[in-house]
Amino acid sequence: MDDHAPDVFSATVREMQQRLSDRNLSGLLLIPVQCIEHWLWYLKWRIENPDSTKNINLETQPRPAAKEAVYQARKCSTKHSNPIVERLAIGMDAEWLASRSASFLAFHQQVKKYLGALGLL
Image (cartoon, rainbow, N blue to C red; front, side, top):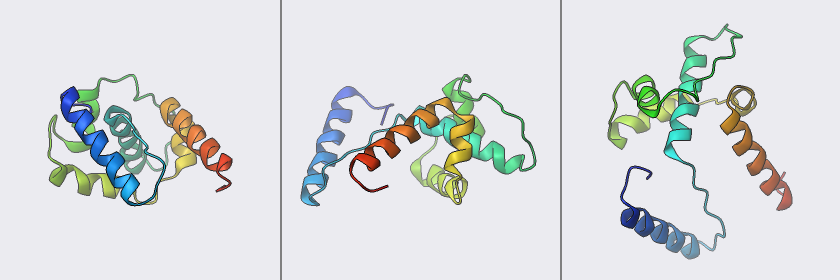
């Protein structure tokens, strides 16, 4: 959603809020696409380098580089990206990703804290 105009973003948020109220849910999790693309890049790197213990920093790389590395394209449709995301996310090791990505570590800690406060952990 971060590539959309502000009015499109606002409309999408309103739609999501309506869908939440329809399901009697009280939370909405928004994650910048750039973060997700970099996290996917880490996961792809791990799949391609399963025996490596090297701690690389991909988060300093520009977003176009992440898109190219993950999707082999600078722009792609969800029809193209969704199967790639699903393949990379299967069996994802959240603890490993948190040990490699500062942004994922922060996200992971916030989600665990929130779930703990709800008594779900």
